[in-house]
Amino acid sequence: MDAKSKGSGMDYWKKIVILLCAGWVTIWVYRSALSPAYPQINASLGGNITDTALGFISTCYFFGYVAMQIPAGFLVDKIGKKKVLIPGFIVFGLAALLISQATNIQMIYVGSVLAGLGCGSFYGSAYSLTSQNIPREKRSFSTAIVNSGSAVGSGLGLILSSFLVVQLKFPWQTMMYISVALIAVMLVAFVAIIRNNKEDAEFLAQTEAAEAAEAAAAAPEATVVEKEKVSIKKLFSPKMLFAYILYFATCYAYYMTVTWLPNFLGTERGFEGAAIGFSASLVAFASIPGALFFSRLADKFMHKKVQFIVILEFLAAAMLLLTVQATNSTLLLIGLILYGFLGKLAVEPIIISWLGENAPKVGIGTTLGVFNFFGMMSSVIAPTLTGSISDATGSKEMGFYISVILLVVGTALFLLANLNKKKTVAE
Image (tube, rainbow, N blue to C red; front, side, top):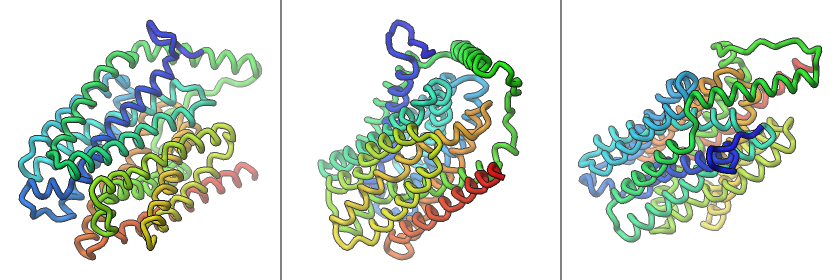
């Protein structure tokens, strides 16, 4: 069943996993590169920029990213992944170049919006490719491998930025040049590996025909089920809506943390130089074994995904609470490591796998676009809100408490929606 790539013995879906993992590495090196260098950016632009204005850099990026989610998902379904990904990454590369040449904060804002628009092409394309090409029994684990690129890229971006810019005093623009080089490599890889829309459609038609034949052989008297159509009612059914809210809370906690954690460690917890980047990167690197471990368990116990999601989310909230209330650096680092191990990047592959099983089967790109739109709305709010809280109170601690509350409430609502579903089925 698994198609081979032309001229290669490797299954196409395995190449897709590697390619998409590398795509997330590239995106996250860029995303995490600027936050450790906020003081250097401030100094290079005059030294009078507030925390709110610095946090707005991330908000601008995520505004562009969120704005592209539903249009990109729609375009993926209409014209194909390749035709969406390649122009998106070209815009991404041009945006990173623009930021590297910025002479004022407004140019960084404009470049950040454009970078967000470019990166916004990736999510719907990536998870349409995983949903349509990865075997079902390997989907959670493979998605975790894809998502581990986020952790690797985030860790690399934080470490490189804190080491090169903060410690070795390289210009902060250095990280933008590194990002441009990585984007160029990814564009070549997209062109070489991803099928065009015609080849993709032919492969999916063959797969659907084979699955229909298998189903007919297993249950010859079964009635033919009509294909589902994407509709507002199905996209916003209670179970789906609470999944979107859960993802909003999950992303809020994560993006607040990755945006402001380096600054929080440096200004409020006494960390210095490269130690800031290495400590902040613990969240990212700890998430890799967590994602692989829990997604493998979720593939093994396929009917327990809701339980996995709920337990992981509650534990992640507890670890964030431990991080902000820690009385010494050792306890703080333990909280960060466990938050990484149990948090967004660990639970996200299971949520996406659950979504693939519960969302309408047709137009998966649109469904994923709506899902990610809700999640990423939090990333527009969290950086600037936390910066505003810092300007008003002199501390970012309240940002962590808000994240904990959102995680607990979002998880409780998701659990209730799925308990109601089970009760309805039982009745």
